[in-house]
Amino acid sequence: MEFWFDVGSPAADLAWIQLPRLLRATGAEVEYKPFLLGGVFQATGNRWPMQVVARGKYMQDDLQRFAPTLRSGVQPQPAFPIRTLTLMRGAIGLQMREPGRLRAYLDTVFRAIWVEGRNMNEVAAAAAVAAVLQGAGFDTQQLQALAADPAVKDKMKKVTQEAVERGGFGAPTFLVGKQMYWGRTASISSRRRSQNEQRPRHPRPHRSRRGHHHPEPAGAQELAHGRHVRRHGRCLDRRPG
Image (cartoon, rainbow, N blue to C red; front, side, top):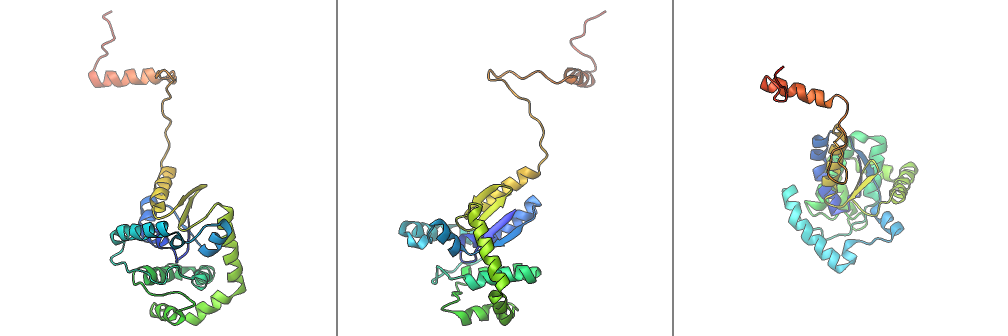
């Protein structure tokens, strides 16, 4: 299962919360795909929800409806939409250099933005961003160096372009095999897909258009007869002599 996301998406936050339970329930493995949502919007002609009045209002209502069931507390995010270029480069940099710290980093950033309602806009609140990450035990100078690394920048461009080439247009997006699921409920649909792919598949009897079964395979009647004899001690179809 591939999980494509940007921390600036509130729907991605709700999917992130559900992800551990999804993986436990399905036994699936996840490949994290941090990408730049603004780049995908630009390439696909999509727009931020708040740029469409009716859609933005619905999204706010939808988050208030579902977020409390997944998060212990949810605060409004006054800085939305958030410029996440450096934050997402930090995620990719950790994924490349220190993958064991990626989840802790994302937990910290998602919580700061969508639970604590902090302004994590890297342009207007660089000091606040640094304070949040330092409080979680991250070296902000190291993260800034990662974000400025040409290899990390190149990786970000490639992953974002890959998202577009594979049909992505928003976040979060799940890919299970070739099946794509998008949005807040994507984790539910992808869970069902993952579970279905791991179940053993047994052939089912086919019916013709008139509702009749196709001929049973050789030996099926003999097996059924044996079960009947064992169950009843005799076969009612037998005749004396």
